Each structure stands twice: as structure tokens, then as C-alpha cells.
Image (cartoon, rainbow, N blue to C red):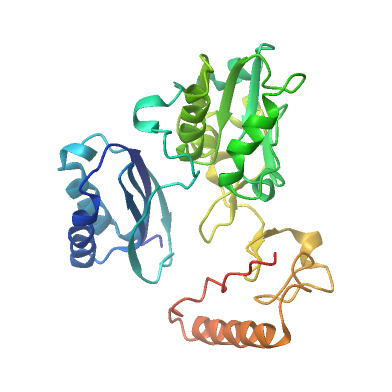
Amino acid sequence: MNDFLTAAFYKFVELPGFAEFKPRVMAVCAENGVLGNILLAEEGINGTIAGPVQGVRHVLAWLRSHAAFDDLQHKEAHASHAPFYRMKVRLKREIVSMGVPEVRPGLMAGQYVKPEDWNRLLDDPDVVVVDVRNDYEVGIGSFEGALNPHTQRFTELPQWVRQASAPGQPLAGKPKVAMFCTGGIRCEKSTALLRAQGFEEVYHLEGGILKYLETVPENESRWHGQCFVFDERVSVGHGLVPGDLELCRSCRHPLGDEDRASPHFVRGVSCARCHDSRSEAEKRNLLERERQVALARERQQAHIGARQAPPNPRT
């Protein structure tokens, strides 16, 4: 039975008093049994929350009661178990880090393209289509013909744009550009970056890949593979059906059947990508954590922090 509702949302909006908003958000989430992660910054809000259906709906209604978020859009998913173990509200410089402070998506973002109109844009030979997600996300699925910037993190995208704008490169001459990402937030900021650099015709997929997979029938789809998502589903396909990938708890990369067949794969500890980047002490700690997770699962208890590994800067 699906008892938990997950809601993902973001909005770029001028929010000068964002720090004062934090304790109020924490309080209303606690009152309604809602857990998850919310980022607040001067440029807006970005979050994913989960909990009882009525509790999540109450939090969303409370957010929309504020003028800054009165038109806040969200995406829903149902689950049979709690996807989060705590509530975090963090204050940030940006709700999605790019490192270019002059880019203001609330004022400069490109033109939305609805999922049902996206294929027409893909067929336009004068449009350069760019996947602005990170390389490991692109590696498990993307739209046919899309450029992969091969970035390891979103903060590398401005450098790629500079290189791709050089003579002979795909963005030279400032062509029409269409950008897409998982849920819309990164491509909204990416299109604002291009407009700040003088690109006049810039488009982005409204609602991101997830809305496309939810809206466009599979027999009409130009999507190939799976879409990485930042929750316990790991990946989804058409109709937002969960995929067959799992996450390496050490390096956070999605793993398929071939990856799991590797002799370097130890559930909760390592995979072929990261097996030589952890010390033996770190591996022992990860193995013990995985054992505790398994015990908690057998007892049908939540293991706090079970789903996260310590940061590994070497992978």
C-alpha cells in the first residue's frame, strides 16, 4: 500500500528574507510529520519532501499562501516506505550551484517548451539540443541527438559553454539552443546563462525529462534509456516506472546488471568505479553500516542515515 507522498518543487524568485523563512518552514513540516530536504537562497526555493498525504498537501498549501510561492508547481510520487529519515532546511548562496552570481533565472530564463511540443524542436535542424545534466546521468539515458557536455558537476557548465562558443564549436555564432535536465531547475538556470551571454533564442523543456516521460506516449518518445533520479528509485523510464538500477553507496553512481556482476562490487561498500579510492578503514566502516542497514530492514525499522555514504572526493 502506498502510504507516503513525495513532492518535488522549486521556484526561482527574488527572496531577500530567505534566512528568516527557515524556522517557519521547519516548524510547519514538523507539525505535519513531513521529512525531506529544502534549500533556501536569495534566488528562491528548491526541495523534495515526503510524508503522509495530507501532511505533504498541508505544507504545500502553506508555502503557496505566501505571495512569493503562490504559483509554486510540484511533482508527486507515491511510495510504500519513507524515502527520507530527517528534515533539513539549508540556507545556500544558490538553490542550484552554478557559481555565476550575475545569472538570475527568475528574470532571464529561456522560453518554456511543453513536453508535447518537444519532439518538434528535436526535429528542427537549426536547433542545438544540450543535455545539461552530469555525465553519469547522461550515461544511462538521453534524447537522441543531444549534446553531452561531459561535466562532472553543474558548476563546470559555464566553462563548457565558453569552449563550445569558440569558432567551429557547436555554439559558435549563437544558434538556437534547446536545453533539458531532470526536472527543469538546471536547464532553467542554464538558459539564463546563455541569455546573459547574448544568445537570443533559447528554449528549455518545461517540467524536465520527468514530465516528458510522464506525458508523451512511449511509441512517440525520442527518449532512450533511463532517467536518473535523486531518490531511492535511482532511475525511471516511460510512465515514470522505476528502472532496474541501484546506487553505489560509496560513489553514488547508478549500477546496472553488468556493474553488479563485477568482482569489485560489494553492496554498500564499492563498485568497479570506486573500489580503489577508499581506504581499508573506510571500507570496513561502510561494510558495518551496510550490515546495520540490513538488520534494520529485517526488523522493519528505519536506519537513520542509511542511504548516504560519506563524501568521497577521490571519485
